[in-house]
Image (tube, rainbow, N blue to C red; front, top):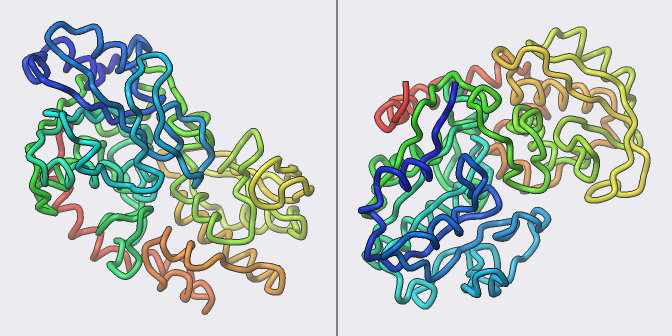
Length: 380
């Protein structure tokens, strides 16, 4: 299959949305056409369109800053345009940033999970644009881990933050354009929104079935395999285990210096978690938790991504680790609760409730969300 990105459709079929406008672009290193031309260069080449400002999410406009790192506003050396940081002193576009702009274009690749911060950045951009009567064009991109599977509990209001902006499940099964439609219809964000859909994408497609090149949307998302595990393994950020940051396979391996890796792999493999095999491994992170220390752990080898459920798998892993290492293991709070969207899951794990029972409690919320999801879908 050959998928045409929203930015390419915009440039070929909908130039009328841009012409005569002073444009602000919200984008990053993933903002590229199918032919790997930057969205910046593409917009600057258009007649009767003036690109006047750039806006950067977490990791900066060039996608090189580490997770959680403060990103200052700056000047782009190539274009001399201002780059306003939306992950610095403020995370919402200010009145000063929007001065002189009469159209915002949003073109960023996400990875299909609630806590990927580009989702919240888009929500804040829509809200700010609505408050200033500035229309927004969202150039859609495929959900790289597909649009069929929904996982995780619905975010509860007390745990909303920049890594969870509202009542979404952890893995939502929507594209960035469909999320924008959800925000303006279901969440009633008042904004003049136009979503330019992709052409040729279908909900059961994974990124490597689109014909598109994988461009890392953030430094620790180097390949599709990382994104496949990420909905579950990112939860490890909320513990004292390493999630593999600072290694060649972040979010695909989990460990700590004190972990009994062989026991853990054997235990998890005996549970027959669908679509995944665990291999004992050693790794030494060069960054983040346990930096410079040799960790023992397991690597997740996904054998069937269609049946693999990363959230369920990581809950099984956490159950096993707490059983084997009750004194060494600890939570990083409130980060874990904010990632998962509730404190109930952690409490249920502490009380040794079966993972199947924990997951079963999510069904009602997921069913209600699915009604909203179907109302904003752009693809079959």
